[in-house]
Length: 277
Ligand SMILES: Nc1ncnc2c1ncn2[C@@H]1O[C@H](COP(=O)(O)OP(=O)(O)OP(=O)(O)O)[C@@H](O)[C@H]1O
Image: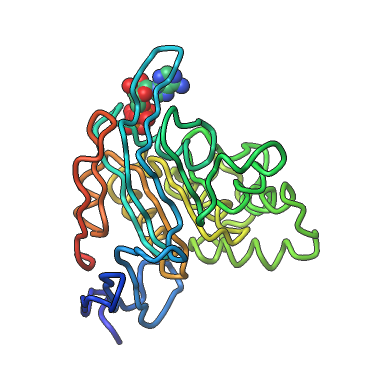
């Protein structure tokens, strides 16, 4: 049986465009996921591989004249796992809110999958958001619904036929290792389990992009690792994942590309190799 440890990281410069890194990783994180996973991450520079692009983006909140993001230029490629780190107030949530079009840039342009977000208006904005799974702290589970119904709720909202719910909800709960808690109410789950249900709800619609803002915010170190493992399992299935966190120790434990914000400026963009479990 394979040990659950990082086996190899092979880094090479691909012709023309990207520096890519393949990591071979047995049975990565996700409970129930056996065998080896091959993780592909790197700096995507060809346009079709760019999922998120910030081009000289500034965000100033008019009411308080707070400069939350200051002339930010960054690209996140398809299939990357990216951490966004920085102290409280550094601009992490503002970055996420711009991607979701919950906030608009004061200057510059944000593009998602090559499309400028300024092109999404009116009824197109919800369509944009449906292509993203979100795990945000203000995005709590509904307390009167069990795990199954909380996850199915996401399918109901986007109009997925009810006959498809059981299969898709079971698969999502299986991905986060909570099949056996299908009927549990949120109050009957630990905080870590609740967060995993929130991740199941975010991925049940199979979004190509998952945004998680402080997904381990209220959790102890064990539960935080559990949640991180699940997010990495989701990443291994091909989803682009962006995680905002101030928990520097988590970033050190599960290494990946890490963007550091300080007072709204991007001060570091590191590509840390492999996993360190
Ligand atoms: N809606 C808003 N109106 C005015 N100012 C805001 C608003 N939201 C955030 N800010 C300010 O913008 C700056 C960046 O905030 P942001 O929430 O993006 O930081 P953060 O890195 O996510 O912080 P935390 O880790 O504490 O959540 C802060 O100075 C904050 O006070």
